[in-house]
Image (cartoon, rainbow, N blue to C red):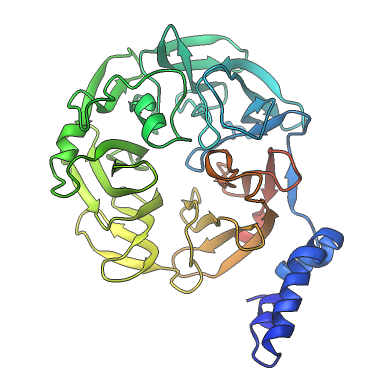
Length: 425
């Protein structure tokens, strides 16, 4: 615990004094004396965050489960858009491209897309088979959502009949879902522009997760919504969908959320895993509330969720024996976008805005700490919340020595990097 936290937590000072000090620190000190604010929180006045994009246009990468750096670390994938204050419509186009890191703040547009959202963008990701020069993303063409493979020269290499949600680490297989249904039932995560072909069906057997062979484009269904819904005995009349697919590090299994909802605003979710040939469908966690997660290895998943008979924690769930244990019980106390470092020695995480509209960026040494806070960033909910919120979505560089975030703390949505080698080395 840093000096500031020790001061405002001590009972030696009256409660009113501590609250007044906290209010001054998080409002006036943060704005007028930024170095002092950083020193109070982190014991260091240095601003470690470095912007790699700049206005007047807005830039962001997207979700926390993909690496924006290419293999050599010379390029950073990003989206560029002209607005930052509303949800994208079917007519809004985003540029997709790269930021050469030896020429900071110069975005190079390599293509455009009409398939994007503020949370996950167009699902930009580098091709594991050519991670220095080729990348995937999604687009809308001829009345369909499709997946695209492009290179850093701007040349389109191929397209796929369905959009990509996840790509296996060997680059041979992609996984897809119904982004029109996702847009209808979970606004902010799907794509505008197309109607859900199964809108009148609560649990269609033709819809679910599809596997795509990335070499020839052939597809097969991995699991259907009807199969998933058949295991739910409560909530008759709810609409079912899937979201948040992620492949395990060794490529043995994929994890995903099965979600059902009656009114969009509220939902229930279960965490499933499945082998990539469609066998061994298994419900790993069914505790009503499940949020962000990451694979530790092919057997274990770290996830923020209800622990049976307890409150919410980060839980380490064992795929094989179904054991569950709490991680970081006293220091990882709220939901965040968690991801393991490439060597699995650290967990990178963030928070949602606190009562002062501040998000905290942190790392946690695996498996028992300590937690090291890296930054606190202003993210006012009155301007950016709901579908247009700007979560930090922290992501690791491939060597584990730097991280990347999206942030609005300077009034624009931009991309930032932070070198943390001295902390994790």
